[in-house]
Length: 87
Image: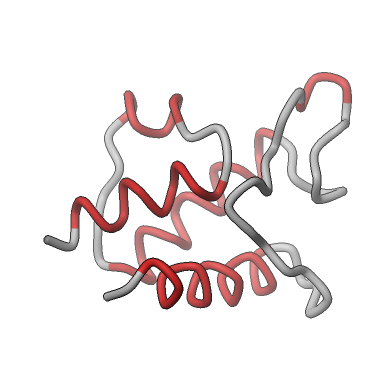
């Protein structure tokens, strides 16, 4: 699977989890600074992050470990892990 295909599938997952068809994720889309509510996606808080991780795991048939979940700082990092797991 190509990086672009993974991003496209992730975009669908984000739209579903956040119930917003207008979401368009890119490599730099992040949940940065959730404590201050400054993520790129309005509803992306710590609870939704868990829902998102579970949805991504289901979509790609993978399982993130706790270390990976804590290091996912943006969509690009998530794509890296997904591609690594799919090899």
